[in-house]
Amino acid sequence: MDKVVQRLFSILLFSWHLAFATTATAADCTPQFARIFSVQGEIEVKRAGASNWHSVNRNDTFCPGDSIRVGEHSRAAIVMANETLLRLDQNSAIKFTQFETELPSILEFIKGIGHFISRVPRSLKIETATMDAAVEGTEFVVAVSAGETSVTVFEGTVLT
Image (cartoon, rainbow, N blue to C red):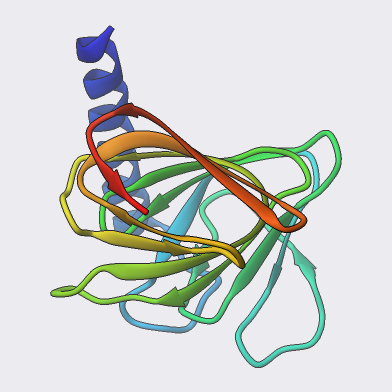
């Protein structure tokens, strides 16, 4: 099973790098924080400094300060510039807070469920209303609801 996950992750990373090289971006920042790899249903973005939500299309990119929300019966897959794969379930909301090349990037997880696969130690910090998590190169799920956050680790280490 581990080899299947590694192969899938490698394919996703290759596709992400290929898409960055050949596709115009919707975000206007350098470097981009993330790119949406899969859009199923209603996915919207509110750009940093904007007040309106807009539909997201496959291969759109995101900058620090951008927020994403996933509608009812919808899902999204996002590949971050730090090589983390994030799958968002329906009714989820996140904000890309800070992108760093030398320090962990910061993602604010507002609500919902997110499945993370990260093989790069100390590349991502996740902030919620009730808990913070630091990724140590692993596969895990974060679930955020009113006043409660849970982290389920499948492989590796997550510091909370």
